[in-house]
Amino acid sequence: MAGNSYGTIFKITTFGESHGEALGGIIDGCPPGIILDFDTIKLDMQRRKPGQSNIVTQRHEEDEVQFLSGIFEGKTTGTPIGFIIPNTNQKSDDYSHIKDAYRPSHADYVYEKKYGIRDYRGGGRSSARETASRVVAGAVAKQVIADIKINAFVSSVGDIFIDKPYQVLDFSKTESNPVRCPDGATAAKMEEYIRQIRKEGNTVGGTITCVLQNVPVGLGEPVFDKLHAELGKAMLSINAVHGFEYGSGFCGARMKGSDHNDLFNADGTTKSNLSGGIQGGISNGMDIYFRVAFKPVATIMQTQQTIDKDGNIIEMQGKGRHDPCVVPRAVPIVEAMAAIVLADFYLMNKMY
Image (cartoon, rainbow, N blue to C red; front, top):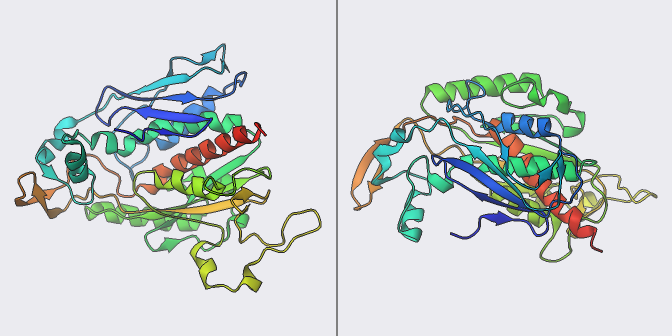
């Protein structure tokens, strides 16, 4: 199976399955001499881990990271950083009913057809549990680009949206509620809706907005390695992501150029920022902001039709511990992938 690595200079390779002994990864290309703050790494892992509130999956994993290499006396050495995250709360029997069946809208069918074998326990490699390794790498990447501020938050759940621009939001309030929405009134509505969806045995999708501030001018390459293209690829590689837009996004398609152009100030900044901080694939120093759309979690606690490996139409119902809405736990994952992209381009820029 290919495709387990991401990045050019700052590169992360992940390994492990949802119900295996451990997850883990190797971070290559991290510069030497960076004093790592392990508390911030632990904090990001706590924000992603399962079982953190009663509106997410109740699988209880501490997600303690064990670093194996690349760090000496608290500093990066420049050699590959190896780490593992032990799995401690697997319940593989929860998946015995799908051993010979394919869950609707999961990777079960395509995995078995492509590879001739699949790990049905929690989805194996296709499980969102793989993203724990990305959060470790992202937490390290954030410390490589410490001057850049990265803030993601839940901006919608179902039809419930924040109706305020990000500039008026207080990002310090994002962690004040289990939904990770910085607007208290909207967060309360989202939380109640997720609880209702869970009682119905159903799931719901949502969006996450991410804002990158203090990004230097010049990150990104103008043809195939555009900054927004890499951000899009990074976000679309996250489980359950079905959409990505930056700047004016799809709304920009309805506008005239005279309204959409970001006119310059004398210092090179722009009066508006419909470009979303990126022009010609290169950062221009303005805020970079984008939105990521997550589909509803495919496992629902309702009876649905599906097929088994012999092509028989059967009925099945989801079992086990699953998120009724994935976006609250995906916030640190979005931040992590953004940090990995920015750290990679930052190090590439230093080569010029």
